[in-house]
Length: 259
Image 1 (cartoon, rainbow, N blue to C red):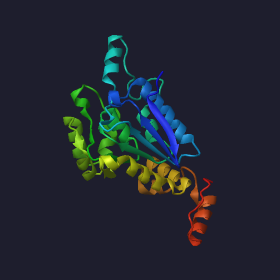
Image 2: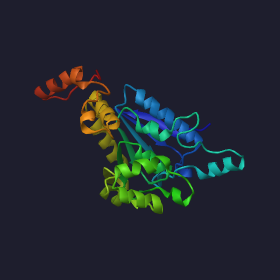
Image 3: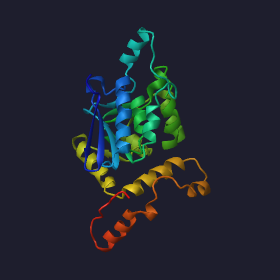
Image 4: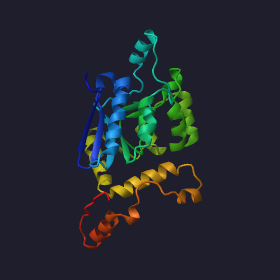
């Protein structure tokens, strides 16, 4: 069986790439299973400090649910798994809870479920020509994850307009509304993403993981409760904290040990 994704570690960054450009990198059952496995592997890897999710080609980051496969299953009397049901954990939630910084490198249109996997990542960067949207209202779908996350990541009225109309917004508009961190020209996109991810991965791994745990688990807590969280690795008592201070004093690059 041909793999739907590729996985590699370059430097301290794990790159997970959807390799289905002929199907606009749509999410089939095999694709979602392989994505889940790759995120679990990257999460457990001692070599990877940052995880980048991207896709092959320039036309589409991910066109969402593989509707051709869904139609074939429907004709066979079968159905795609429903959100938050079944034996397999929801892919979007798994990506959301990855214990390391995650970046969606949106090389082309991110639509429906493709938008949702981008929303599940901590940071989003896109090529200038990319469009983002949730057209589920035009397909009779539910956008379970997107309807929860989108209004939390951009102005609520704009998010609801996107959901209600199914309109795709440009990368420029997405950045204006705070949904994107960066935009890059298509010709420079891959190189810029590598530099962006590498710059984050150069920082102390325990601190990055601490930030991820604290911000995710304290998201909806009152400030006083969030301040009392103690989740993720403790950088304050780590060897890396000692090394980071010493490297600063000695004017050199820190040598992180992740402990």
